[in-house]
Image (cartoon, rainbow, N blue to C red; front, side):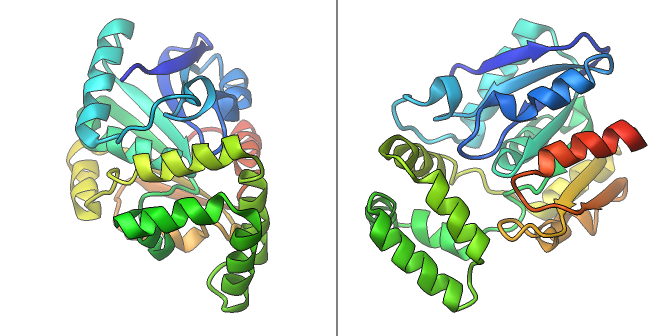
Amino acid sequence: MVLNYHKIGNGAKILLAFHGIGQDFSCFMTFAQTFADRYTTYLFDLPFHGSNIHQTPFMVTKQLWKDSLVQFFENENIQEFDIIGFSIGGRFVLATFEAFAEKINHVLLLAPDGIKVNPLYRLATGSKLGRWGFRRVIAHQPTFMKIGNSLQKLGIVSKSTVRMADFMLGTPLKQKQIFHAWIGFKELQFDIPKLIQLAQRFQTKFSFFVGRYDQLLPPQQILPLSKYVQKQQTVLLDTGHTKLVDKVVTYLSKEGFS
């Protein structure tokens, strides 16, 4: 798997950055530019996103991801680094930490996916029938909105989540992208106690940033990991999901990195 990325800044520290679903490398562009004196940042396009949007569908396994990063580290002569991820980019942060914990000094997770598995995600990706149904639903907007509104009435999802999903699936290309990403990333699941042990063994610092009004990945989603990591900070910001990255830039600009 070829990794596509942009290199920004000239700081002494190395930072790898992974965006959310439906986005591209520019998600962390302001972050990279703001902290260009601190970090040399590698902004990645996730599979099926950005420059990879027309990729042939494939499964992103942990081993494939690890092998790709080994080659990347050799090419860029990277020995140690920090890492940041937003939303589904959190899965790639956790996969990288699991594989290379000894190289990582600081993990920054912004409303991360991958700590707790959403039952709807498991239903949509866990079987051939579920994947067939998922493809049919997202490709037919009226049906998708009908199901979304029903789930909202039952209190399973929020109104803002339904609106966001409707926006993200607004075109056939976006529908294809989301489907391939959800299916292609489903192997990136984690043994949280193992991650906690790695964090303790290597004394890795974890910083969690969550949005007070985030209904897509609410603050409590991080607790299975954040509650047990020894060197950690959790920052609750007054925002929802979509503006969280910008809020983190503002926060760190004022408060600095601890």
